[in-house]
Length: 400
Ligand SMILES: Nc1ncnc2c1ncn2[C@@H]1O[C@H](COP(=O)(O)OP(=O)(O)OP(=O)(O)O)[C@@H](O)[C@H]1O
Ligand SMILES: Nc1nc2c(ncn2[C@@H]2O[C@H](COP(=O)(O)O)[C@@H](O)[C@H]2O)c(=O)[nH]1
Image (cartoon, rainbow, N blue to C red; front, side, top):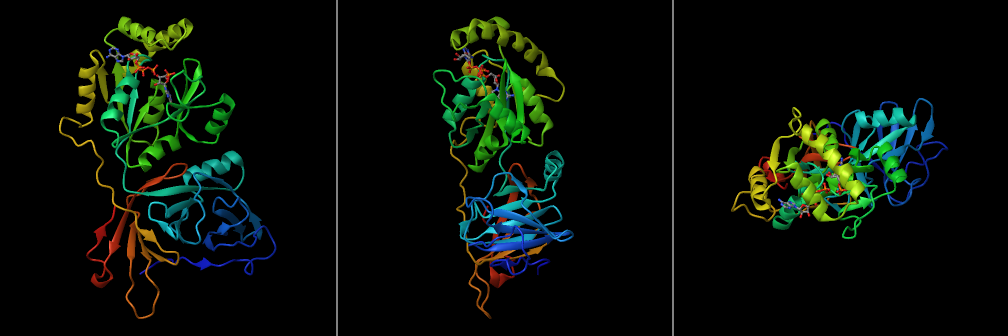
């Protein structure tokens, strides 16, 4: 078994001439792809992430690349294995399987785009997540129609099932709003920089301010095993529709324009000027509700309870549906000195004690056949099995 065994090197100083590469306290791995050697675990970056250096064999130059994506915290050791020309799988040792699998992307479409944009060497981390999250729900509609009210009811009734995507905005907080809970309240210049850095799934200028959904905002909800709810305007819904995120799109409609105005005024959170602006924008948003291929469902929010019942029904939450989460299987421990090998889409991980002539213990398979996503977000859809070494892997138990 095994196409390309990973190799772990204590330190590579002896192997390479003078250059950027410097002595590391932990283990380092060196992976060759084309004419480049990627040294993972090199200690030139801050100690709070696993460092990366690249040795260009054609020019004999060391380069410290720009590292994008959510970076893994260092562990005492790791293994690394080439998956293809585009990415390396890094498995952290001494961690549980919910934090063990990381992909270092070196030539994916995202990395190529960023290399072009920055005109420099770029790599990107993407955390591997076992299993598939349920499709996110995008809720859109004019300001004051009751989107937030419906979402709050859903989250209250099903707290372990749904999680809210906390948007960024440049608007000032209202008196009842908390930073990090209702929004991430942000300076425009900071948000523009983050947009430029590719951190946002979508963003739009709405009623004179900038609003946006960061990739992280959606990922943190899915990481908790919850279904993500996005409350965004129609421009944002259009952008998400065009993105790789597969979601369900719901438009909330007022029973009449007069009722919408009444609700917006009764809420008492906007100035007269803002109310007028929001009502003008509402007309344009309402016109787009039937835009072909944009919304999957349109709900009229006349009586709140009736509308809420319809929302639950279309989400498959009719009476009697359990409000608790599906049972989440416990993560397993990845040993520090595990060994890995690759066969097709499957990675065999042996966490057993390496004793000659003894059968391997704690053998796991990481199946990458259904993996999707990637930097700057998570890599999802991984499957993880234990295998019984005495049964030649036939009796596999699905862990997640
Ligand atoms: N069906 C309903 N009947 C009467 N009032 C409602 C109904 N739904 C919501 N409201 C009220 O309307 C006001 C606006 O609701 P909400 O803040 O949820 O709107 P929204 O669509 O989230 O607005 P925004 O887009 O500005 O965030 C609130 O005061 C809320 O209590
Ligand atoms: N495109 C996006 N629109 C968003 C986002 N977060 C909120 N919104 C929409 O903005 C308006 C106004 O919201 P308010 O809190 O100021 O009343 C409303 O329609 C929201 O749906 C976002 O991340 N992206």
